[in-house]
Structure formats: C-alpha cells, structure tokens
Length: 142
Image (cartoon, rainbow, N blue to C red; front, side, top):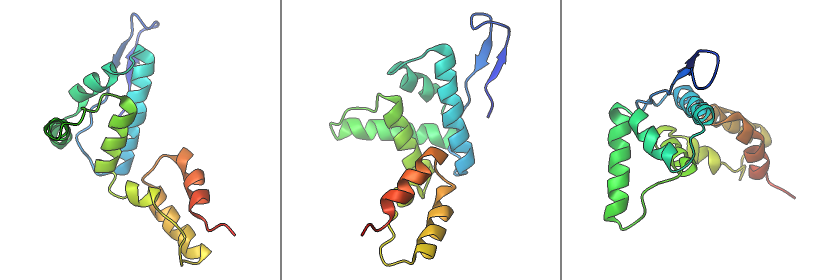
C-alpha cells in the first residue's frame, strides 16, 4: 500500500489514500494505518473527518465489520466511534488477533528467556515504537 503523489505542489498533486480489506496479515494493517496517517497529514484532514473519510477506504470484510460495530454501538446506546485514534484501536483489536495478548503480556512465572521469546513472537504484530515500553512494563520488578 503506497501513497502515490504526482505534481510539484500540494494543490497540483494527486494523492490516493489506501484501502483496507480486512487482511489478517499484520504488515498489511500496519502499513495501511501508517499510509492513511500520512495521507491525512498531506491533505491536512482532522477528526472527525478522518473517521468519515476512512470509512470510504474500508472494503470487503473490513467495511462490513465496521458498519456492524457502529450499528451495535448505537443499539447499545453508546456513541459511535468518531476519532481516528479510537478507530485505529478498534481496527487493530479486530484485525491484529494477538494485539491484546501482546498488550497484556507479563513475565509471571516464565524465565526471562521464555518471557523474551514470547515477547518477540507477539511483537511482530505491533508498531515498533511500543515494543520497548511494553517489554519493560511486563517485567517483574523487585
């Protein structure tokens, strides 16, 4: 998924926002999130327009899931998701099956080697910047 730009200025450039079809490949999702964020920065799009626009870039299973999620929230008398940050959190929770497991990973009764192995196994599904923080938070502190 690549943002394509042509032309020499923002006004003359055509930038195409990427689509997401609900792939369970973590690289596809993380690339899509990153490229969509770059698109918003390029076009200077802010919330809540980000969520409304992103809905047009969801396809297939992803769009059906998103529509169900929003309708279900209304039925439960909850507010619809209206911020980009919350939308990304929900999408990752759905399409990165191990994302929550990674966020909740703790050393517990594992050896440091076992904990570290499990950490790296799960970490391929999350953004690099969060890896170190999550590893440190999960260690047993004396």
